[in-house]
Image (cartoon, rainbow, N blue to C red):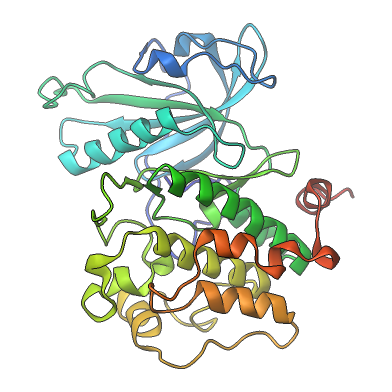
Length: 352
């Protein structure tokens, strides 16, 4: 779900009207869908969340596709969480229900400092019936998530426009660490973009939103090629016939998306089209799939930065760099550009 901070405009590359906010007096009495997720054992979250009635709303953080995100407080421990509430009615498409169920399933499995943590998943009872036959009245599916007070990388770029290269190196390394973990578990994210990379008050960057992610069951299994945000899709997903996407495993698509994010952090806008161009399907198709010329790099960028981007944005997915290669790349390892979490904190939370 693409989060949209209140008092800010929606992301230009993906326009969706926000749904009506859930009533502030809504009764949080849902049962736990995955009880094993409920205990929060990390030092920052000592509370055990047994029911949504254990939480109280603090404020609305934003709206997204089909739901609302709240800042909530655990009543007994005062721990802060983000509560993502997805609302469904009896007209909800089976594909949408399956997509959300997939996200819940993946969140049960992941446990990494580079991936957003889920502390519990709760539902109204009808949503997860096998054939959705009991979903006549609709219902909510609620994710109790780690609270990331710095917002998303998209928020940071809107506020600061660009990041210095040493901080971009830090962002790239954290996301690569997260992708290495996910790919090792045979999970393809499929929607790496600035709004799905969240930052907390310690300067940690974590991958979020697994609504369109995919678990590869076998070595030869291909992903649904058209899930995710079009602007950050790789050539083999946009045009599988031309670029051999039917045989792609999906992992290379995450690398392409990361390359676009890193370049966007440097130039301050979506990098594949001009400032006045509309990022519609035909424009993106042309620039991503049919632009044969080598991508122009900012003259001020370091050689290491340019090399990193070229390895990520190789159109042929078979030749594109893999995550392990990029983690060894000089751009994310050179001493002169090494950045600390505190430097990112100072950039995201500037002191007046």
